[in-house]
Amino acid sequence: DAKTTQPTSMDCAEGRAANLPCNHSTISGNEYVYWYRQIHSQGPQYIIHGLKNNETNEMASLIITEDRKSSTLILPHATLRDTAVYYCIASNDYKLSFGAGTTVTVRA
Amino acid sequence: DSGVTQTPKHLITATGQRVTLRCSPRSGDLSVYWYQQSLDQGLQFLIQYYNGEERAKGNILERFSAQQFPDLHSELNLSSLELGDSALYFCASSVGYTERNTIYFGEGSWLTVV
Image 1 (tube, each protein chain N blue to C red):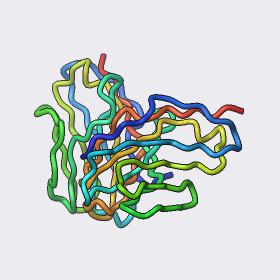
Image 2: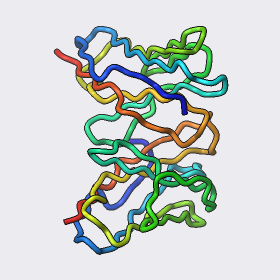
Image 3: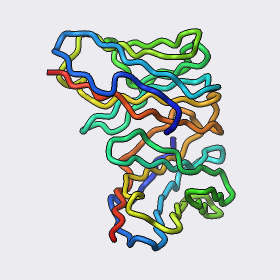
Image 4: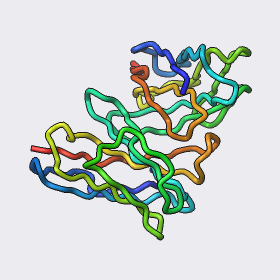
């Protein structure tokens, strides 16, 4: 898996969009970008993944730069329940390698 | 609810003992994964099975073993337990084993070794 770099923590306001950055400058052409989150020791929850194109689902949007060296996860309207550790993973391997992630705190 | 079921949710046992953690994958999923999450190591991949066969091994200790049964449920066996084995053990499942398959995690089994 390519190494990913994420901020250690970030705060966002409830109701506002949360933009979570991830750098993966050594990503190879066949590695996908995955985002998972973990809410306080619960099982990691799949959010979204993509290869080249931007992706959107009911939870979030994933914006991948054209050179694929970085990406941004967008939670369009953050709620208190979105407080969690968010993991960005770049992988072509089904055995996902989780790093330290970004601890996101949504504040009222 | 991811559809992946793990039992037991909590387990306390003594050093030197052996425990078995059980996982039922989502309906239709053939692939099962085991992960360990401890405070100092983060989420570590242990082992993966696909349709009863071992597919990949990660940082799994020799004291640990796993298997996937014909009904696709899986068990993780931990023996000669040490204090350092105290951790949250997650099972996950997916339909297949390619990078395109979404992996869904269970809620975990908390193991405390005293």
